[in-house]
Image (cartoon, rainbow, N blue to C red; front, side, top):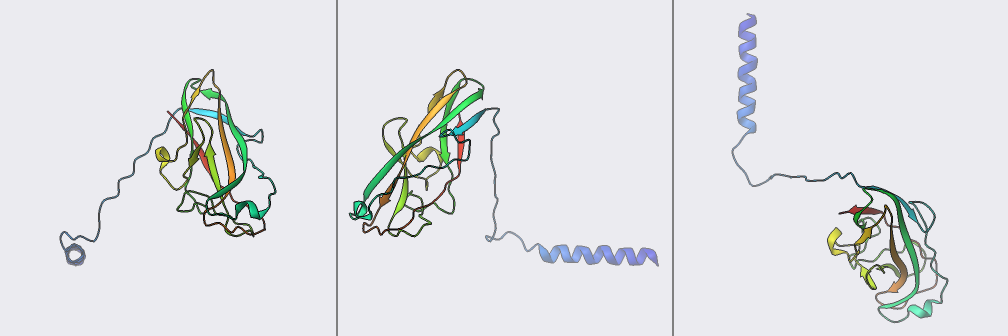
Length: 182
């Protein structure tokens, strides 16, 4: 009697399996995930405040951002690396896409001012606007050399009013960054 019960269970399982597999269909696919772990690491210090830091833009009149595309209040900051292992190589900052990333590459203002965003600029090789909405190598974040275990990356944040007509109020945003070693 036990053998028969076991045979029925196996047969029932085989029937379910054949019903669940209906042959090839075009409603699924294959997800491939690639990554890389490196031995590179450095101590990160943004504007002398550690790896989490704040940049304060100057208080300006909203009228400075009345024209479409107007920028104002450019404020420099640096990301200093030290104790890098290995002590040579290349590095750049990858500004990670997140909830504050806008399709134009700027950062969303979460404050009360309207018609204003925050834009990042790279000063490591000229004054190139960083497009946070792009992939790592397409953001305009320039690569610098690590020498004797240190590197210094120079950036700025500034107000921008893509459509013009900025109104008075507060401006606040944030962005996550990672150091990308080569």
